[in-house]
Amino acid sequence: MAVEMWKAGKDVYDVVTKLVSDYHPDLVMVLDEIAVIFRERASKAGGRVILGKSRKAPAIVGVLGDTEYKFILELASDEWSGLTGAQKTALLDHHLCACRTEENPQTGDFKCFVAPPDVTYYNDEMDRHGDWRPREENEASEAPITTLFVSDDGTPPPDMEA
Image (cartoon, rainbow, N blue to C red; front, side):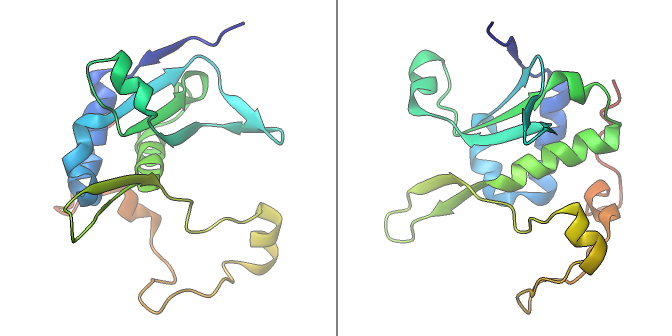
């Protein structure tokens, strides 16, 4: 049986726009080429629920539609409905962090790609050893999670309450 999918509403795109404006300057040029879609049910991997996926849009999407999308953010509707506004914003920001653009200095062409997460760990490992991995000198060892939910001007991003 096919899983039903649909494009996200304006409320979700408003949050994506605010996040790109505040935290993802490299995505400003492709903001209108980021599709956000919902799937009816979350998928699972290793018994864990997958809240969403970030992917580079295949070229065929541009052929079939009216926009040459660069990225697709796919969110699980059944899980989304149970998240708080702050969690919804954080989930969208998480997926936007994966979307990257890079300009070729010689040609001026832009390359779009999906980057892997900076850190991956297991809960048991984290419980036993904390955040033990070495970091680059310019990386902060701790970043307060509250910075995810406050803009540069000190205001919280738009609320995503259902």
